[in-house]
Image (cartoon, rainbow, N blue to C red; front, side, top):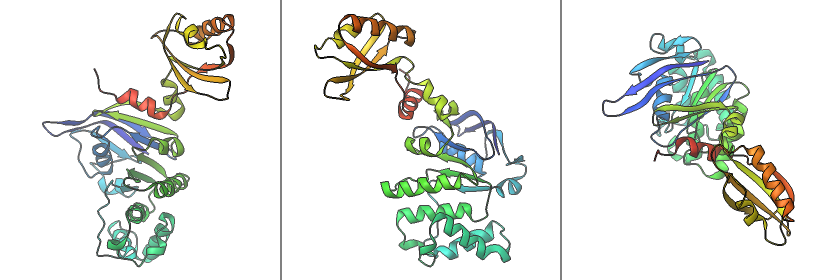
Length: 314
């Protein structure tokens, strides 16, 4: 559905996007992640045809955005981070205007506007001036705009930016519903959204694509050198024993699952095999009279993986 081939955007003093290539298949919901200034919005604008790349090309449904822009855009609904709405228009009027610009046939325009308002959940404000809408409703009007021509592909740039927790939850549920019928590329800073609605993610940092894959695959990249343990330690020996095991770099207290048990996180030295370390820790604790309730590789959060991938170089 989307093919980005060696995309670059050079502003002369800043190389905002540097040789980025990726694809999004039909029916996928893919998260597009990166810190501020990483090149996310620039990349999305090139995909949507709002910004010409310095190098590379974009194919949407097989149509080249530079060579066949109208054919490519017919298949795309784009919601920028700040939707350029007309505050003096009513919601229904604005969406009708946008449907006309997107060449929705006149005979189908009323139905298309109604369907988009219903899907974006703005039917109750159809005859309200956009000027009088809350930020949450304006975001949803921007989403209705992206939907009004019934495109198979949606590109959503920070659809929950500036919303309160309840509004974020509503938009997240809406994106999940839209994913049943549309291919979606979703840019967001809220990593829990990606875990909740996306099957795959792309990570960009300083203009370069630094990681891509399923959410499970990205999570497996993090904390490979850590273990999580639950021990019964009435004599207070567990920490000292663990620190004496070869290959243990750091030990952190992670909680108290019960009144008698401790949960610990053990960070290993680089190159230390987690399986060998787990075996050595278990042996040392048992010999010291520490009961081991559980011991397994620590599971990373997407936030931890994201931080590791995008942290500034020393």
